[in-house]
Image (cartoon, rainbow, N blue to C red; front, side):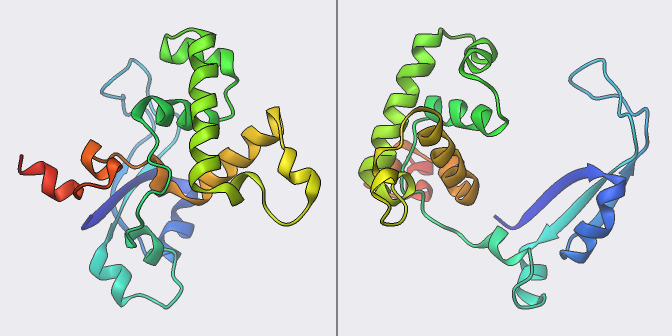
Length: 177
């Protein structure tokens, strides 16, 4: 990844600029979205961050980790990623099912496979510390821990190729197939 574009409300501009982003353009209030009939309620700004900017920036800047590549450990399927992305937005299972146009049972099955995958590949995400009660996290607590893990490790929701998921070859290798 050589650059990142980020669009945010104008009132957050100071934070992005302090973090090393550069302002690219301003989208005025009332600008229509291209994919719906809605319009922006307030001014928004598009920011740009480039990999060389991160390398030249202050040590410990917010940009550095954005360009740091980390291999996904859980290798969630695309279907599991869709559930996790919506769960990060605090949607209930019923809302996730409705949004994905699948049954509630399908959402439950995806959660089950997510929990199994996390327990096998990153057990400390479900059982942090040495608290004996933590080892028996269930239901909402287990879900909260998985979502917290995914929020701390955004690479887990990054798209990847199937062979990279299985550990055979990297994503760059499969692009040439």
